[in-house]
Length: 129
Image (cartoon, one colour):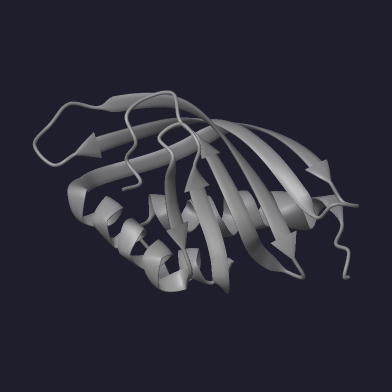
């Protein structure tokens, strides 16, 4: 098992994953995941298993919205368990609709240098369908 410094966990979440989401960069987003990764939205009991399902979910998110922003991060890193819990604010503007605001929390579990499991907790309607 490889271990990485605290900054690696924060960077993969903020500078790679959420930067990719906020800029509609599917390649940058998917590069954070293992091929057999699982992403589960706990607040709606929705599961996306494998990179193809995760790609389909993000493609739908990008097609539905004109603007996505994540910020105001608070991170807790567990280097021993290769995980990071991130609390953050979200602003999303669906095409032709008003701005939506969320306060979310994600738990990311890495294996080596990529996400193996991600658990998402949303304060509003599930946008990750």
